[in-house]
Each structure stands twice: as C-alpha cells, then as structure tokens.
Length: 356
Image (cartoon, rainbow, N blue to C red; front, side, top):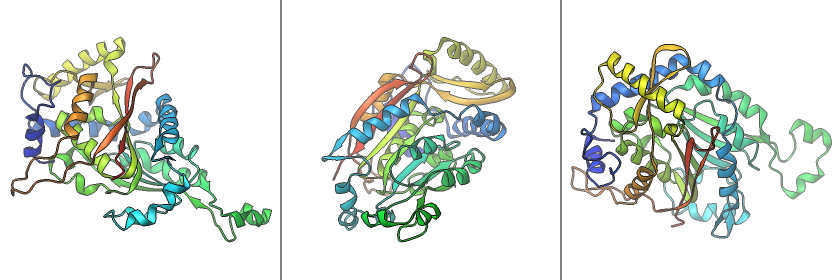
C-alpha cells in the first residue's frame, strides 16, 4: 500500500474511530517500528506462543455452521454439486488462477496463518481435501505443522464406482481413485511492509479461493487504512460466492488485559521512544519475557462499521490518472462475538463476495 493510499483512506471519512482529536496518522517510520516490534516478538517467542495456541477458537464452530448452512444461490458452501459443477463454466470469465484449483478441493487463503490450527480445525470438518495458501511473517510458527497436517487428514475422493474397490486397495490408497491430501503452500510475507510498499495486492491470489480468513491478524495492523486494505485483499482473493471471515480482538473487554495493556504500553513507548498512540492502540508483552512487545489494536464496533463502509467505496484515481479497480462487491452475512471466558474477546465478521 502506498502512502498516497494511506492518506486517501484516512481522508475518506472512514476514520471515525481515529477522531480529529487524535494525532495525525503514524508516519511510515513509526509503522515500521511497530511492525518490527511485533515481528521480533513472534521470532523470539514462536515456540512458547504456539504451545499456548493449540485449541480451536469457539467462534470457528459458529463460522463453519454459518458458511456451510448459508444459502448462496441455493448452494450450501463449499461442496454442493451445483457449485462445483459450475467451476469450469465460470473459469472462462474469471481471470488469474481461479481455473487452476481442483474442483474437488476446498481452496483456502489464510492471512497471518500462525501455527495452522485453523487448518487443523477445517480439515476435521471439510468433506474435501484442502488447498491452502498460508501467508505469515513468522514461518517458524507454521513450518513444523505442515507435514503433520497433510499426513493426518488425507481425503479419498471417490466416484460411485469406487465402492467396488477391495479392502486392500482402500487401505493402501491405490486403485482408480487414489486419495488426495491437504496441501499447504506456505509463503513468508511481511504483511505490513507489503502494504506500505504497495505490493500487498500482487502477493495474494485473485478470484480463486472458496474461503479467505484473517484470524489474530487485524489487531497487529497499526492503522485503519492498512486494515481496510487487508479486507479488500481478502475479498479480492475469493471466487464469486466465496466467503471472507475476519476476527477483531477486543481485548479491552477483559479488565485484566486492559490494565496490563495500559502499563505495558507506557513501558514500551518509553523504551523505544515511540510517539503518543492513537486511541485503542497498545503494546502488550508476553508471559514473563522482559523487553518483548507486540503492537495490538482494540477494534470497537463503530470502527468495524467504518471499515466495511470504506471497502465499499471505489478506489481513488492513481497518480497516473487511471482509476484503480473497484473492490469486489459483497454482503455481510453475520457479525458476532465469541471466545474468552465471557465469550466477548473476538468480534467476527463474515462476508460473502457477490456472485457477479
């Protein structure tokens, strides 16, 4: 994302939660410094962080029920025959890598994939192998999980004739319909840096995925404009009718976390000579590690409204005078809170890309 784009979104009226009483937008230098703190945190604490992040989020169950039960042109997501049979006809009019996906697999983009626990959750429920494009700035979180994930969740894709296979063929996975396995394409990507240098959109797949998610990512993006760009990127990666799901961490709903955030932020700002933060921006530490900080943003409801409003607006003309491509149209399917002791630490938003 370019600095001009940052200024455009900031001036669009969508920054209602970063009000006029607050300081101006962070400079690129400050954004990079905040991003470096977060990146260093994950590089240093990958093992201990991953060890505490093994169980699936409660909210994912509701997400899965929503997208599998939702009536998308009379076709439940993701494996309804009418949807899958239409892939070849759609491919002729949908650009980029849409046609390259196996029609029998579930194509997933996971932005900020962490240790792939969402993929483990999904593989246990999807009646199809997964084709995952996983992007993260800390591959050490995901790399140890890829082999185990693919081995643990093979899926035999059988036609009606497969019922005649012998038990030995079935057990070995040989015969006319060998099993397909979950495949994870792990790509290292500094999301914040790619947003700043304008390469973010080019690093994502386009018009090709059934499901695009960002869990535990949005709170690490230091500005409203960057968060809006990520939402646009998720929607742009989807095939028509695909779903984008994001979570917004609302850690200030927990009094203990709120108190800790205030204290740690003051310490971290002083230690790293950081300017005054915008409202709802904080630094958090990790367990008993000293000098370790990660940038975290609490997203209130009015900001979520503003984000969705911002990505419905066409992009401003570029410096060359040409209008940028309009963001894909979408509709909001659901918004709900889940996770944490009181079920209110994450705010989920489920969007569906329009069919045309």
